[in-house]
Image (cartoon, rainbow, N blue to C red; front, side):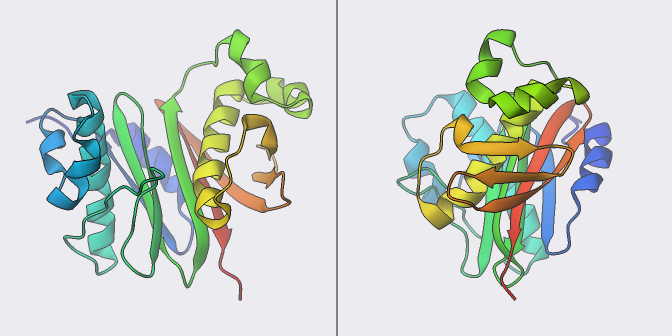
Length: 212
């Protein structure tokens, strides 16, 4: 039987545990493309099998998390802007690389925004570092394993978290990340909390608590 989880990644992702947010992952497998429900499949009709498979895998993870929150069997279609559409009262985020799909969900009464992203635990090519990292971030880069790649993943997670709130496109330099402080500041002043883990992959969770 083909494994559907990476045990080392599963253990590492326990570090992402935040009250109010649940996360999960799945190894992308042949046949996952068939997991797309009719309400989801339409926006992927023109996509290659590789994209449909990864998107199906991410939704398998999402549906497992939704079931834990009392929303079993829900579709997670994609909006015209490309972000997932969640059941009422739920927010969430999906991501995948070539091998692994991840998802995070939360209730809106506890969390205002959430984003997740994943990349292999590999160094970022040097020619991409200046595009991703601000001058301040580049000065701190040597203090963190896979520093450039981790910045990239963090910024992608932040974008996924704040886009549903602001509907504003962000460049990489519009987000200033401090891995050591576990936070990011967006150009409009939003401060976003971060959690991350490192194993075979880099996974970053970005979130904003709900206003009390």
